[in-house]
Length: 350
Picture 1 (cartoon, one colour):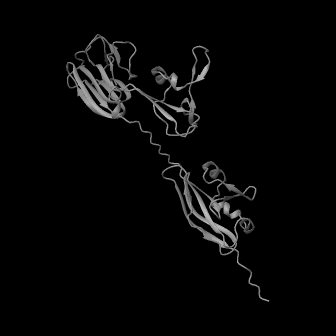
Picture 2 (cartoon, one colour; picture 1 turned 90 degrees about the vertical axis):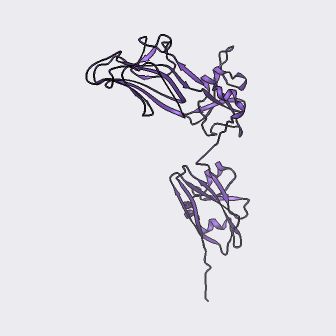
Picture 3 (cartoon, helix red, strand yellow; picture 1 turned 180 degrees about the vertical axis):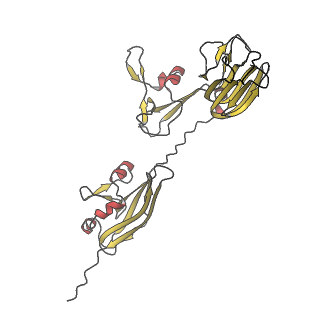
């Protein structure tokens, strides 16, 4: 949605930094423009604006010593305008990638001589700025992301009748609520959400989208790099003898993790509790339970042949279930192999 800064009002629409100021010395339209401050030789005056937009337009004017005192304009550090002398009003416009850009207007002088106004000005600055906001509806309650707690939390507003805080619900949504409480972007996470399929509420005042709504589709693609993956072996290992020990060969790095559970029928799964030195049943379909109870390769060292005999007998099948976890894309979590060491029978000669 285009927004125009005419500099006619004392409170500016955009958040400029630097030392430029509103002035009545020149204006393209109206009474005011935005101009460099009064500076001496070898000094400069700058104005900056960092904002997300895909289009900029403004009128500019410079009145200075020709070829010595200069007006310049930069977009993201790249110079777009350099002019001196008496320019009159000129229009600059440019389409940009839709992202955050830094605009820099600059007027600077050499070591001597002043001419004309000895200033540069801009007026009627237009930026294509769209306000977008989001809410997540979770079981009838509107939620937004809490950066501190790293989860979605209910939004509470004051009930005008009771003056008490109440949860924000879909029936209370108006533009003002969206702009004051809505999120500027969606956090790709389900932390804090109960409903497995929460709804997304989207607000925009971008005219292009509003007028051609059928051409736009809101997509939320959740790319969770740390998404656990659980794998179950299809084929078991037939035990020729009782198990003495099991050695696991795997590779993990970074925040990667690899956990295991054992079964002889792919129905009941076990993991060894090294604290209580006892087997416990694991629900491998429940990621929370698998994460809490699953064994790691170093846990197998604690398990003795007596412990293995509590579950497995000669002729049973041994199956492994794996819980692969990668905290980042560059982390590793790889199963390489398993070695089952059997209890050798005593060879007694009488």
